[in-house]
Length: 474
Image (cartoon, rainbow, N blue to C red; front, top):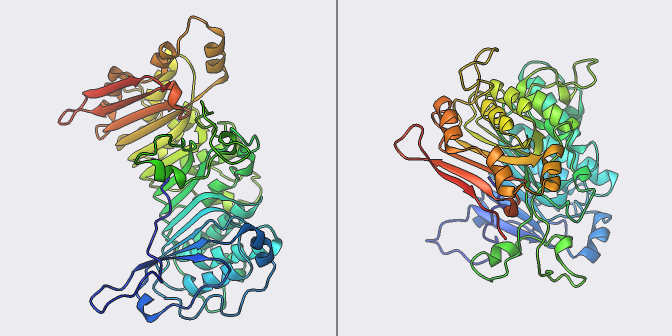
């Protein structure tokens, strides 16, 4: 369950097509300014468009304050584009480039938006307003939104949540036409139903070199993007990629990612030796975590509790099939609450607070069964988790866990992990309640040196598992 890079397509000007060649349906255009080229007739069938910043850093600030041409978004832009990717615009966009692009695509067939590695709302107020208007233009028709290593200033994500709130209330007959979404739209824009089905927000962890990294993530705003129509959601925190030292098959993949500043010298060359590893998610008591739990488990999501309005008050997903929440740490009680409500979930990946006790492992098993105990008791109606097929748990050590590892000279990492990692017997208990479960994996902070446990169900059986604890990398 890792974030994929944005899809790549042929450059629109990468060659001539013969009469016998199929017309391109995807194109990638590198931009050295905020001006799209004219699109030839051969591009009429484009369905996927990727715009990649090739702007030199010394020129970026000047371009942001330079008026864009009237034809920055040419009328020849194909109207059938269904997928748009915007990547590597590190300092944002010169206004009103984004809002014009949104007007050109928002009323058409655009269904998927991917934004990769950038400050989406830019560095100035006009750029921020322009980005907000872009989302107001395109949100209504989108089925998928992917925000990968996308940062912004405080309040921007909550503003997008407000746009989704208005679309939800319009869709459910609740009005809301005098708000930000309505004022940002052009007159005559057709009102569409709220179509969003998949939301992915992913970050590569940089906390080893940037102590304020988690503070740069709007963790208490991201849950406002959740609306009832969503069927799959990912709030993921990925470990930084390890630079390849072998030059093998994975070397090119490693070069696609910038090195963490903690891993390079003054000349930008990788420093040899062991590097910090793994991730540290937002804590289970974080305001954003608590809001996410309320969104997924039902109940009042409005922290203020005054008027029942605002993006915090919109109900969350009601029929999730997939949840990845490694950005936020749940305790076992929070995970239980979610699974008791989201009974149709088939894929689960979650960061979970770990206590160094055998009793905690029992709490994890109970949580994955939606609160149903191994004896069938739950005391509070039917549980959840019966539809689970794939489970990943990222263990987040509690303070007690850290103290035990640090203070007990007799304790080995393997002996502690045996307490918390599910055994084959534990997997049999889980699979009796979750018969569809096929695989289970658990790590500690996604750090290779801690080791992990991995179980896969034996084909043709209901409760036999193969796998076990794997020792950590040296």
